Length: 243
Image 1 (cartoon, rainbow, N blue to C red):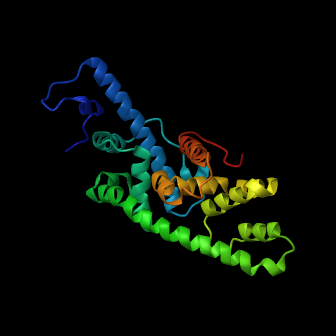
Image 2: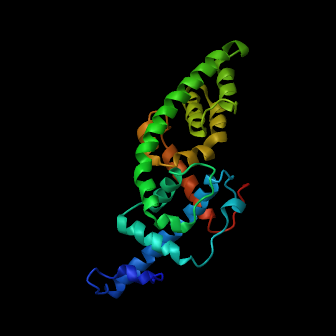
Image 3: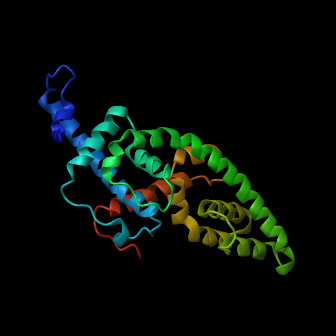
């Protein structure tokens, strides 16, 4: 069966079309949701592949979307799902580094299953990660005390040692926490991790808020959303990510 026109999504269940004004509003909504889905897909596909999020890896959107994106938008709107969260959770259900699926996979029942189950599985994963990274940071700081003159030097060493298995969001949160008593030096350290921390958090903000909420700095969730929105929006038009 061929792809139905977008306008079909506005027809009522008894086959009677909605009033013209409602049709226009619904069509505009589908168009907006389709664009968000397509942009978010390209960002998450690049991340799934392990690629840096640059203009060349994300690519640039086309003025006219493929019909499949309107089919996906129709499904998302019908179910009342957040389009960005739908894409992110579907990708999170996959093994990192594997080739991203094509857009039509998002119409499958398997994609729906990923979306519905990813949140609960991610909660367990994050709880373990938080305990592990907290212990790792504490042990690393204790082990380095004799090598540095001040606690500030110890903390800086741990924050910037890429060999210590600490995530960007944990490092950012730790640096901001330390900066509240020890100043600008650690604000600058935190800034180094801000963008990757934001991208990590935006995997599933609600789950991060529940499990990592005690360490995530106030104001960071809003900043993370702004950063993610900027990157997703940049997927529509060329952008120099070096700025």
